[in-house]
Length: 493
Image (cartoon, rainbow, N blue to C red):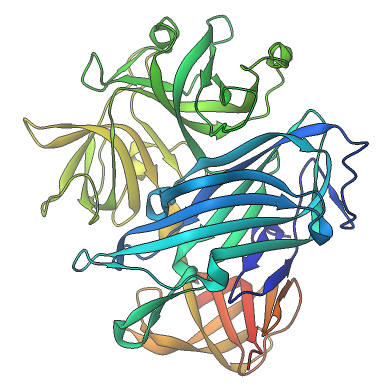
């Protein structure tokens, strides 16, 4: 089964609840029994937040304000509040390539949990064309209940981390003739374990401990830790591919990891890396202290001082030294000209600019080519208007997959014909309002049934005339083809 079908797919429309499927790693799954808090130990639960790409031509920002995150067992037994308080506002468009911590909570009773409740107080859309803002109505007064058919386990003395992936591209629908926008949240939830390819995670915190022998440090105040008995710490490990850049003393130039590990405690740095599961017996040395780490991270880049995050698309293919990019609106750098991005070179054991795909593959600089979307961490050199890069994240999948939605008008054995919602260009062909879609032999189908009382999502069904469907397909020699299909059956009156 592909990762597409292994995710919790949550489509929330109106105030109804959605029944979903979940693929759980480590904790396993259960039958939804209520949680017996009298006999179970305690574990820790963390929530990471990220976003699938939305159309940057429509919005400069999509600001989601979250006021509460809860875990609930079946029938609302075992309710645990992970966060409740002042709105935390996140620009979802800045989370297309990375995940950030939303809420972590220790002392969560061990057992099976079946629902995540997310409450939004506001959603602000900043329009790209004129910079105006729009606040669509929030279904169910902002309450989103993510109900899992198979519950996930919280294990005693272990940390369970979930990633909420808000698909802003599918969640926000344009009302006819651009007269407004509707919000229909589409959220994917993944259990972050050794079998899950997590996005990069970005953390900012203070260095609390350093272990030069193991090339690691403890970064604290890096994770939201309100009402917790620890300092929100993360154990960071620096392998051979990690790089350190200093914009406090060296204008953003690369420096050695050993130099970073010789810094004073209390220094604030930003680290970008992947959640990891390396076996370190010393990880438990602070088990009963405020320094106990809630996550482990394999560092890709560490940044000291201020670094810009600039998004856009490649406009001139890279050579070994640089490339040019067209900067997206809403970026911290505003220019109508192409921006030159300079690769900082590796010298000896000091790594230069890290180039990586969204899926975590280390790339050669020559892989940065037109018209791929990119995100660059760097320092702007005002003398020559170049961006000295520390990190370049390349969305290689943008050239190989295209998302389409529409209504099925005919079905054959290995294909279907789709009446698109509007005329678009698919796979470089002239704009069309009708598309023939080849169906892969290993086609995965997700069926979403929406009624006045709620919605049900199941991994079954078959394509039929009149269905509303969506898919992520690829451009093959014989035309557009997909191995995944989402059928939306809206039965509401």
